[in-house]
Image (tube, rainbow, N blue to C red):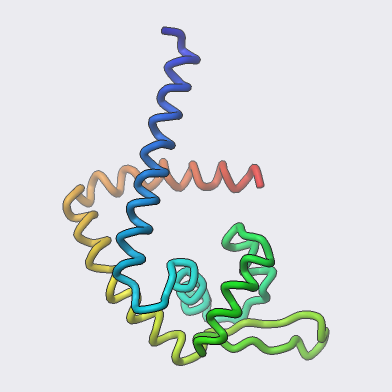
Length: 149
């Protein structure tokens, strides 16, 4: 077997595991989320809560590597639920800014409380040392994939 074919097999095996782990994690976490909350909703709320700043829809779309249309859809659902406030940019009426609301912060905290034990159990079962050793590889993969966008 050639070096190239070994690398191809390793690449396929690696990404197959990542894709399957992603699918299984999303299924498990979605079931644990508070009623009506999706992972995309939690991700946006978590991002806004952690940053502490208002963000434009375009900034959020870039941060999550989704189209503006997809982000607008998520933001509309979050606004309807009362989890975010969307206001116009006072200097440029064509732009908007998004901020997390107190209800959104509470919903994010409830979702985090629901999923944290699941994630912790998995990390504990695998072992913190193994997880720590995997993080740099996964981080570098993410960075290299971001460079191509």
